[in-house]
Length: 426
Image (cartoon, rainbow, N blue to C red; front, side):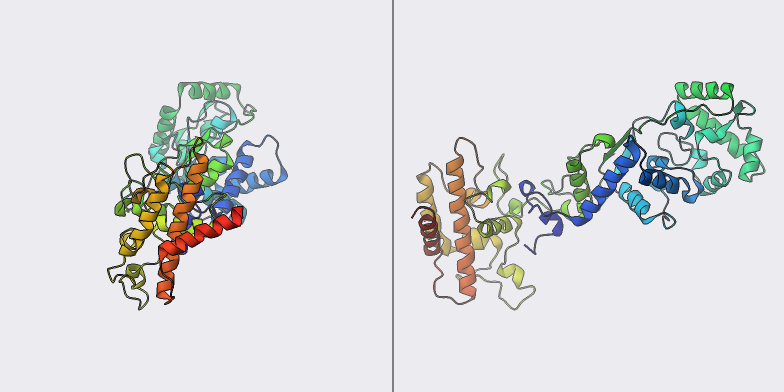
């Protein structure tokens, strides 16, 4: 299996993988679950209070959970001043596409709504780096910072310009105009009511943020395969508050291995033996209570093209690229379908399958038989016979390379079936 990419090995069996857990993805999922607890936990645990405090002091932005509202290009690059745990949270968050349905309209959420790099509050005048730095130095990074409770009005542009270290109020005036234009009527009405009430600011408990999480748009330069092994294009954004762990792991796994999976077909036989209409590899049928694990592994490797052939091995070893039986160029299709030595085995399989009212074909041999409830016993037995036939082909080829005497795949297949019958029923 070492010829299959690591991303394929981590896929579930029904998707063509081996179901091995990806430790890197597991760590990212733990970070996402910690974020769920940080953003939506009803109680305030000690670690969440400490995490909010560190986030609030980061780069003088005075954001805590508002950091997770920012668009990716506005995300701080230098995270070295944060705790390692908080760094992992932010780096994990940047792997995905995260959006809010609407900006806050009332309460403390509106007063703490970010001014900088907020997708829900487009302030073009505050997008340049110099203006951002001036606003941070002036401690004006939230909507509530633009309110003057003493005057019961919005900040005066001249006052804001002095705090930003500017000589002219043109940029502050533009910022105020764009913020007012971006706010909804309900938000403007709430701010006007808060200004009329004066200081102290009206107390309010922040509500849970309405965040959704999903895959980032594909930025790979590789052309996606029409039958790609990746599933990012199938995953839809879901509410982050109720996102189950299984979804988070699937999203993280396919995101981390997107470069490997996006241009890789689900099986190498898409080009060698195009499936018929409605036909696809039956990954779940490769392993069952009847099929031993090593035998199922050979069928799995065959579907992924992770099998030794002369054409592949000649690039790394002095082994010739010709078939050891007929001296024809040894491709994957030749080894398991086209070699003349396989015809006695295929005729034997044809006679056996006719007893089950099935017709033997290359598609059935490679893609195996789907398991249906009414014919489950027959389907399991047929898949066992097909798996033993592939194992016989594999063993006889390895035997010929090792110069062993017995290389008759039909005889090896019969012997395997007889051994299994004796072990099960005699």
